[in-house]
Image 1 (cartoon, rainbow, N blue to C red):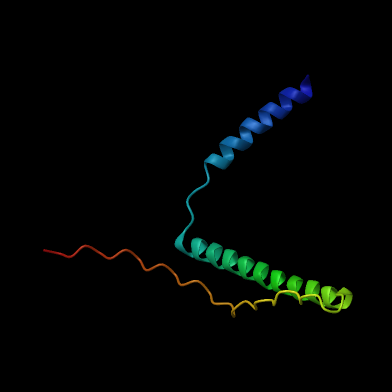
Image 2: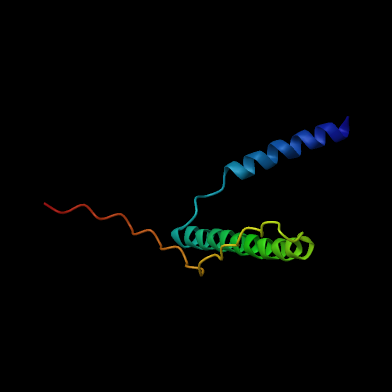
Length: 93
């Protein structure tokens, strides 16, 4: 019973702490976007390398006269995301 009460208390306390996080600063948002873009690019490179490895194995075991495996498409070079331009200030009258 004590474990259930302790778990419930910790869950409620953890939920209230997570709800009180402040919003990201522009620098933090930029860093998060760059990290996300790098991870996505790494996934594309990994998929390309996996495709190449699968094609090598398929070529090794391919029966003569069978169709060749599909060609792999190399990902373009990594380009960092462009930072969003700040909102334009309203014109003074």
